[in-house]
Image (cartoon, rainbow, N blue to C red; front, side):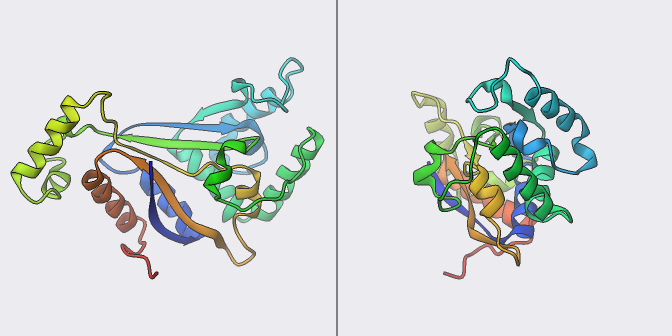
Length: 233
């Protein structure tokens, strides 16, 4: 997978970018798994069902919250994902929400570890993993000539487009076009944003699939989120 910059360097930009990642016509599906720890203290009215689930999960005697038990993660919608990230990074109660998470983790035997937010070299060691979110795009073979004309035109000419579609259809294993957020643990949710809202590192997505297609979609995401199409660096 390759890192693709979203151009977000501030928490408010990041929330807009995450909203835009799931809000366009090229999304075929998504899988967002959010840990009970990340859901239970976010004071967003749209998360009432998720918070109730989280309270039940964390209060279940037979479910050890210190483990990697898959029952501690809830499959969430795009709206719930945005609400959680917003609750930790930009919401009116974000500071209190971050403090509540650290306190709750400590009560379950977790203590804040040192680490650099958004460090992908450390991603496999993140525990608990609080947010694991990603989207799958519509296959090239299923793009509609009218609805998805922009992506098809991004190839420049009919031959390049047909070549990309042929490669997708004949690839073994099959090509899947997707992008994922970085692994978000306590370091990212609690320390990933400074007091003035700056991100510890520019937000990226980790993408796999046809580069022309992904570049087109991510440019559209950046435009929808009112972010620069090109980094200053």
